[in-house]
Amino acid sequence: MNAPLPHLTRKGPPKPSDVLSRIGGQAEPHEMRDPFDIGEALLTLSLSGEAVTVLPAGVVEPLLARIASVDPELPHFVLDFTGSALPPAGKATLVAALGGNAKLQFEIEQKFKALPGEPMHVAAEFPPACLVLNRRAARRVETPVGVNYTAVFRTNGRQFDLPLYDFSETGVGLRATPTQVFGLHVGKKLEGVRLELGPNLTLTADLEVRLMRPFRTFLLGEQVQIGCSFSSISLQMKQTLERFVTSGAVERRAAAR
Image (tube, rainbow, N blue to C red; front, side, top):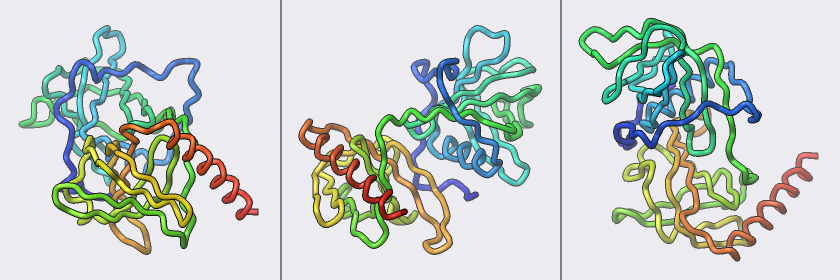
């Protein structure tokens, strides 16, 4: 797991409107138990500065925090309760939005003792398991290998030409090197993006960056996943994407047989 990239802009301090409820009893989340996957999820929250709702057992009012850092070797992470209050000792449920498309929930039990010299910082061990509720309703299709799927746009006086790794009628996923993402951050609006979805379809749309997550691949080395949603989309464009997504999924299933 990598240290936070210096040019990924974090969100500001949590606001009361950031409070999230627990995953409902009627929902169907999946359980994540792999320590590496849990560490990746916590690191994503740390990089984005996403608010974490802390629900201590027996306490009515929720608390808000952010994840200040993640150490996968110990493994532990540090919660920053600046602007809120430290929870009482005991169990607490933590809930956070993960990348705008999922809700992460897990429990910890500890004394919530502040770190030396940091009165609002508390270290906690990785939870043994997390619940993940995927809220993505739209089907996504991975782009096929060897076909040109790209997003081309200009922002801050720079030209970007980034490969797509998946797409749906609600958004696209891009891939870049740490150097290429300079100037991009969560919440960034991208206007007039030309989406080249293979040889048969080119669309122009406005996007909003919803997720930036570093990862490493064997062939490409350090990479950044950039999840974008459509800021506005016409009915005709949405219908075109729905047809394209459906046909793309069918083609990929056929090719896998």
